Image (tube, rainbow, N blue to C red; front, side, top):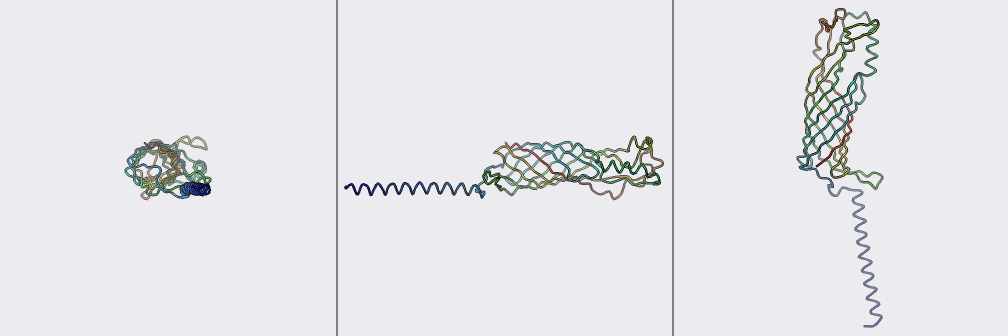
Length: 262
């Protein structure tokens, strides 16, 4: 074999090697590009796995009451698209500055012999609910074009019960000069219905952050036609009656939470 033939074969081998290397690099670049712009596979699987977590809810546009709801949760993912979840917690609640202004303004209105109290004054405290989570949508968003974050979009619906207390804005049991030393208060246990739309963002296989828009709905009640002149600690409602059309109160919140999946 001549030197010329050897050189030709060597050049051919180098060309094939370079072509193979370029093809491999092209395939790798293509795979990386696909991973950045599309969801090829579910990287984080939850089927037949448990999860525990916690969350805090903040009231949207509080009017007469405000709530900060602290919950712990436990869930079982029956399938990738379906889970059952139990939540229990306690809401730190208070009346708002608007409610305080209403109280102060009403104390100067001495020409109202009979009064109807305000609705939507029940404050949720302890609460517990069980519900189902329908989570069929799995996707990915890119942060800064280089950091893909996988997520699930879900709907949540369930029910349970809660402990509530209520402080009247108008029924004063003990006047102290131009102010009121004690307002009429009530406590009750009521059923709750809760609905939510949320995202679960996966940090790793076992850790996820949740963002939810959630509502808590329960039966409202308040007193009407109260004889203001005869109100006392022994007779707080003074001939009044529960409103027959009290309806339903709803607390709307944004929830931030964390889940540990195992």
